[in-house]
Length: 217
Image (cartoon, rainbow, N blue to C red; front, side, top):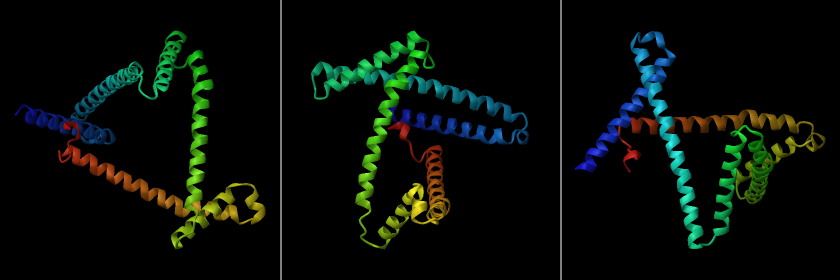
């Protein structure tokens, strides 16, 4: 019985809070249409959003503590990958020390960590990602049917139109490349974004009306 009451209470709180924040969004767009009621909605919505920020901050702190606990347990039990857990914890503690003693994330020490550690690692990661994408594209370029043929054709045109050599092969390549990127590609991207937006709206509405209750799992 207590579990059911807890689920009902969580559902009611989620629906009420979601509707108030959603109402604040609409009231902020037309503040003169709701009279004095709009100020109450605005204050309530801002208060709820600030509470959400506090909850997120505590969630980040719990995630931070969980990372330390998991990797410290792995180090103590000598599981495979212990060295990586040790490097992670040392990097975490070192970054915290640099941040605290140098004056925060915008300090000179933190900027050194970003410029000489984080940025080279990100560049290496994206270089590996580019290699994986190139390998996947090579496998995808095997023509099997009509759809694959058009895919390969458009990909080759765009690739050649992007490099300076393409204009020497055929002066119209950059023009065709721009048309492909600005017309069919942009239309497809907009269609995908519209689908994502509609799916997000549908998911939000299902949570607001209590059809989906992920917060009770």
